[in-house]
Image (cartoon, rainbow, N blue to C red; front, side, top):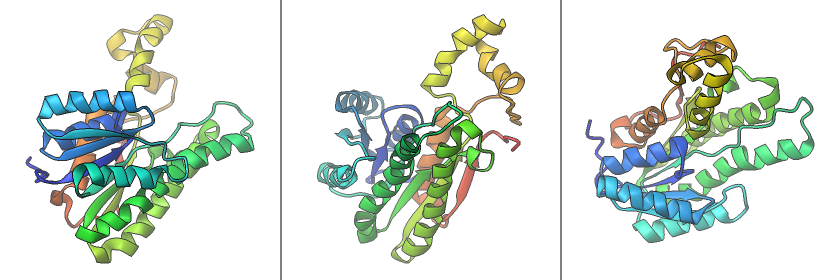
Length: 263
């Protein structure tokens, strides 16, 4: 499907790995100009060069840590200086959490800054540019907001807050023709999960190809209708669609992409 992205410019926060990289790739493949933002500028520039070669689109990189005050505003200013305009932003940021039983105040604050403040600061910094011409925002929550695990309570709590502010912002800025939606991924096989396959296969006697799938059902307790983890590109394609004119009447939505996970 042609998403109608030619001539449009997008910023992908967290666009240098995993679902963010897949989102940037989907946008560039469809003809959009893309700026990827991440903490490591060298990695971002390498990713931008790679995507540019793959797609022939204009892909650039900026450095930003959106958990830090002031970085999101600078990130947006640099993005618009590079692209000349902003048609949308995808925000994919958020540390998973902690495995300890006792969660300290500092751990809560770490997740609050990265997941909640990082997301809302990025959206708030983008809104003035999007109001000028109409535009789109996609934030990232998680399927676990409705099935939280104890050791990830900070993560699930802050991701629930992301879903809440997304809906509120969608209601407030719809009058400016700004659409804002929220995606809730389930278990997605990004680089860290793929890296587990060899060790899980060796430890439990699985094959490499079935290691994650069997762990999901036999040890992690995940009941997924499709019987597998999602792929980053499946999330990226959804994000690109939501950012595109093809989703023109969709705003304020909370969209699960979890393979039919049973909560």
